Image (tube, rainbow, N blue to C red):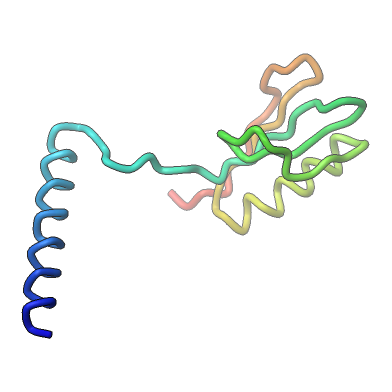
Length: 99
């Protein structure tokens, strides 16, 4: 058991060293996923989609309903809501992140 703990501590130490070097070089070894919610035009209505996802979280007939759903998720995840126009451009951004 002592050999396993020693090996595990060495692996952890090497991981920490690699992370520190990458951070110092301005690189990140992990891509942080955000929980920002986008309200986008979708078919004949509106949809809520997590930033970076192709999959739709929910579909709605009205933009106001989609905004309400996106706000609920964003508040829980401390993220932003990005509201798009019917043309696709960004209309508004609401932040619920702690800064």
